[in-house]
Amino acid sequence: MFNKTEVLETVEMIEREHLDIRTITMGISLLPCIRESAEKTAKAVYDTVCAKAHDIVKVAGQLSGEYGIPIVNKRVSVTPVSLICAAFPQEAEKIGFALDRAAKELGIDFLGGYSALVQKGTAEYEQIFLESIPSVLAQTERVCSSVNVASSKSGINMDAVAQMGGIVKRTAELTKERDGLGCAKLVVFANAVEDNPFMAGAFHGTGESGTVINVGVSGPGVVKHALENVPSANLNDCAETIKRTAFKITRAGQLIAKEAAKRLHAEFGIVDLSLAPTPVMGDSVAHILEELGLEVVGTHGTTAALAMLNDAVKKGGVMASSHVGGLSGAFIPVSEDIGMIQAAEKGALHIDKLEAMTAVCSVGLDMIAIPGDTPAETISAIIADEAAIGMINNKTTAVRVIPVPGKTVGDTVEFGGLLGHAPILPVHTASSAKFVRRGGRIPAPIHSNKN
Image (tube, rainbow, N blue to C red; front, side):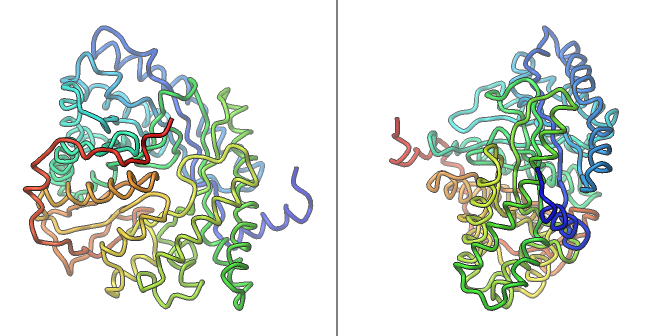
């Protein structure tokens, strides 16, 4: 239970510091939906998702009203679809379209799980499935896709990495009238987690139970405000301040998660305490780093400050709940963080510095707009670099880049809403094509041999 002081603190965090429940995500297993044909499987998928998540929007509204905590997004994640359509991969799109219809029927924001796990190798049916991703993302409104191409135990599947560069390019081309927006619904992972409630990377892992509620809590503004109250503190005391703040935020998230699971007749999965920013002023991870003493995010010291922030957030969350999971930490999506946008516009933030930051943040290169004429092999090489960071450091990393058709360095792209806007960042022009085309698998590091 909350005591009086905690209640008052939570009220202030909500009203003045942008605390919210960023998402309630219901994970649903689709394995029981497999039938002898694509048509029958698609129907079972639609019926199952609509039945299981029928009340998710209503319950979220009730909880928001009763507890006074804004619940921004209502989402669903499903079993990786490549597994559901393994017997008929040429017709995978039918499953994607059924999922989009279900999402619209439910009134949810996004549905994740048009996904594949190919970290060690790509079966023939998975290769066919991957090629369906651009078309599905272009023709659906709410379906999101993710592909896991590497892990610390398996190494990096460079054949899949090479394939994904082309898939990202085709997705951008098929949605060029929307500045390649389809790529905002596509993320390429290393060490993908099974209980992530955030899009575009959410899917329902095969190790999860049938129906699970995972909640993502976000509070960059709360953390920044807490640091403003200790302007002369040393970094050890700053870390303690962040930990205490993360503890309070996680308590609120667990309260909502457990109640949502009860009302939706699902298991309580995890609370993901990720500082997920928005383009709104006062809701920026970059501004937290600048509050710690950086003149602008991207300058020397940024990686160290982010490492401290990420670690302190995790420590505070784990103290507050035994079910902290997902990607808990700090996100650095460029177009979705007003501070990141400002730093990029000033020329202080470049893709190389962002790559260094991904070694210590929660995810990776996220929502970065790059020139539309960037070769597919260059995108594959960016994915490979990020996968290597994840593999060696035994952490989740990801790439969500948008090669904006018809735009180049110096231009700006406007995605709108929570996706924000961003300047086109330059990428290296020296070719990586021969390296990418070698294919094969980069072996797992020596520390993977643990048993």
